[in-house]
Structure formats: structure tokens, C-alpha cells
Length: 65
Image (cartoon, rainbow, N blue to C red):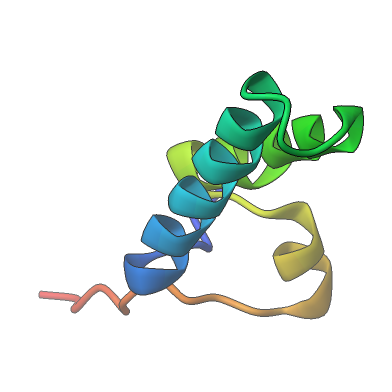
């Protein structure tokens, strides 16, 4: 698994995931809010399978020395 989620994309995924889980725990939204686990985990592990399948990479390019 090569990292393909980086920068602002990663921060947004973590924030959205935590917000959805928090709203579910606070009983603001229904049980579907547990779907927030998906963006939370993709943000934490810096890997998104759909990104890989589509050839998308938001990580900064590493410079070769």
C-alpha cells in the first residue's frame, strides 16, 4: 500500500470522519453516521483504494537524489 492521500485531503478526511462519528454518538444523526469510520481510516493510513483504482494521488511528489 503506497500512500496516495496527502495534505489537505488527509486533514479533511479526518475532520469529516470525526464529525460524522461525533454526531452519531451525540444522537444528532442516525446510525448511518458510522460511515465516518471510512474517511477517518483513509486519512489516518494515507491510503484510499478508489484513488488507487482511478490513478489519483494527492501526496506531494518525492524528489529523487
